Image 1 (tube, rainbow, N blue to C red):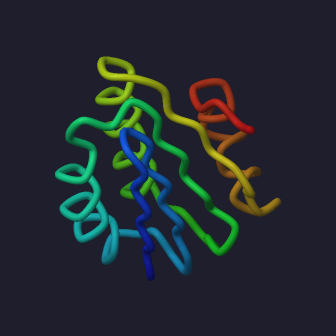
Image 2: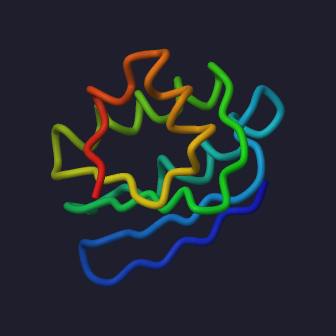
Length: 98
């Protein structure tokens, strides 16, 4: 998995590529959570995300909860296979897509 973060003021864009699974989710969580300090708008660009497991979904849920308290979180460029997982797990009604 590869992540790229770009912060402009209180807006953070995070591009995620590869697989967000049991092996990579803890690393992603450790990298993302500290970067959220002072962020009012988070955009997760999942264009390169090929797969997400329950471990990855837990990271997204935790991130969503943090952002509910301090701003907004948006998800964009979701692959059809990943969107199917969001649909099957109910995440399509939790996340806000742009």
